[in-house]
Length: 143
Image (cartoon, rainbow, N blue to C red):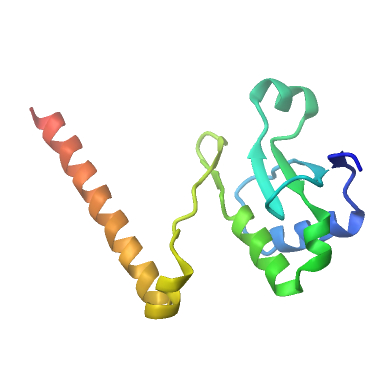
């Protein structure tokens, strides 16, 4: 079996069904590709500017349909939404960036403390770091 292949219309429709639940400030053009060797069910990546210009597409969506066939609907929806949530569009410039996930942890911590407490702890840590960075920027500006 080839590594890359054309995705089924059903898979692409499922992606757009989940995407349409989001509010994006601009219309993004997607290119879809199947990847049988990919370890993630779905992976979104930014297309390099020169290829984006040629293809008239901004984002590559790579999906392993074998995983979709074996996953339940909730897992498929969550994994697709999680990947779509990485998209960040600067409204002023129209530039598209891919964000990193904001919660990476171990399942044992989630089982022990609950997702809300773990997410809060991670957010507090992130805010603290941001605050320190802002303070350094202010200090540098004033000096």
